[in-house]
Length: 431
Image (tube, rainbow, N blue to C red; front, side, top):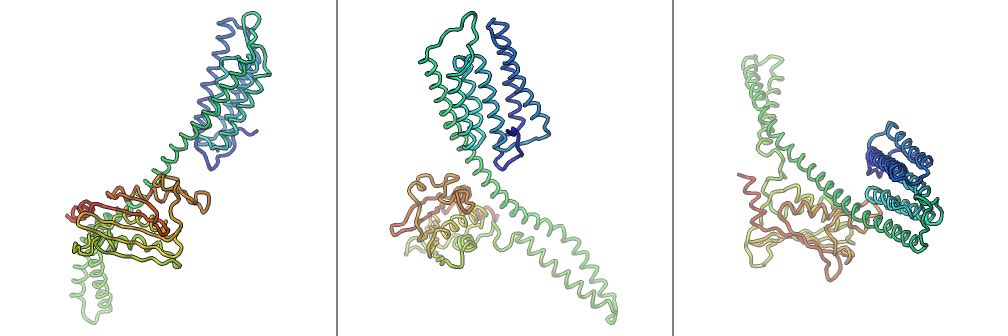
């Protein structure tokens, strides 16, 4: 068996971590053997037991000086832990089997596997540990003792086997479940941070553009002055007159562009520009519309008699990508129609996204908004992070989301903002 295959795609454990843990285990094994044999006077088969420990040390040295660093593959780590189970089983076989009080150490490799490896590897190592304790319950050398070793009752050994088997299965299932939940949350937060970092970089480009416009203003002014002087001094029939005129025209054009850029460095749809909320919503959703699907956009006050003007908000990246992700999700499940309704009152702003698809299954509604919740997790490379990221992004803007199903079929997502809060962002940005 190759104990250290090449790095794989599901690496989650560092090789140096496993090497370090094994060195601690080797030191503990050597200390236990020497203390029990020489300190307490128990008759251990010291040569074969020390040989098993030395074999483990050789494997660890080979791993440490293999030249590899960083994470190893899931299979590589599983092979490494499988060797630990086999080595422990050999030591227990030489020292009394399940009657040895150190038999519980077989739980350690299984717990490590459940923490950092895949479910398949954890099941494999758990099965190997169960086979080991089953063999040790019937085949083993005598328990080291002063004088004749005691005869342990069969029911006691059965109880030890049962306790170890339950411990192996419980540690594997419980630890793997807790570790998986932690990994999913960590991955989901990382994906959200990546999306926000991308939008922050895009927003930062506007600041850089404004700074560039400011810095380039002086040299362009100098070029303009020099070109005017040259144009005035050159005779009208000079062959350079046409080139100087072109230079002045292009210089003026550059100054106009930089002036516009300095005034609005991020374009007409800048995140800090105050635009009607319905325009922001339509801009966010329309980019995901497929050619074969109809999308209706509606914008109106919540009450027919309400004359409150339409809110003007900033086109923030969180709003654009949050609404866009929810609209894209509706378009992917819709049969033929998606409706995006934007309405408002004097106290709140609401965006409702409705489709005529199958709607949210009940078990999804119970956990919606959590990472890795999707009906398409196993196909089309979907990770189940879309709604989680959208909810996280929109929550940063003060939005509250609710999810449900329409009575006539289809899903409905409602996004609500306090109007004073979302409009206050605009006023602060424009100061």
